[in-house]
Figure (cartoon, rainbow, N blue to C red):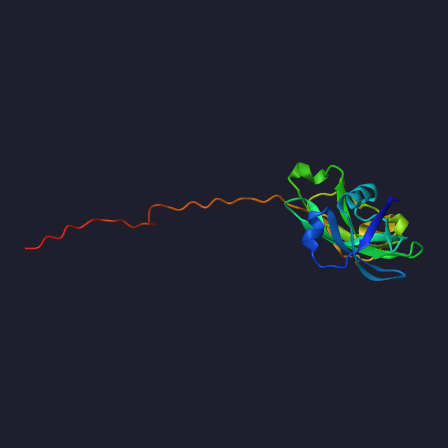
Length: 203
């Protein structure tokens, strides 16, 4: 569990001013809590996320009380790599919740020797799990896959200790055949045609 992150009520709407002072505008809502607009120190949030990960449970101090939350949504400044707004969901640690988790491919692909190309149509799956058991990511082994193989939720469902919400046919990984580039050459000569020049003289 991460250290307690202090928050303050966000009563004004000048979010740009908040960010310049090192704070992030945010909203917290959920279990035994009314929706509140808050602000928290950017450095404190970054430290907490490093400790627990994107899907981990952290503690916020809201109205002077510790609240267990997960980061349910956020907005980023891509150029600076900084969170500029965050939504926190207050949770009951005894109840399961649904979260999206990144899928990582691991292992050396057998089909790579034949030129097989790995494709990942869906990079996340939705799982239902207790907050204390939320994984940072889910690894799927692709080492035995060959060209034409497809790995779906059905292939990993029984191997996981949590409930996967997605349907069995939800595709995670495919191995496709190598692309063949066909070069088309244009003929500079017309088929069977001759081009002649005629000089027309006027009398």
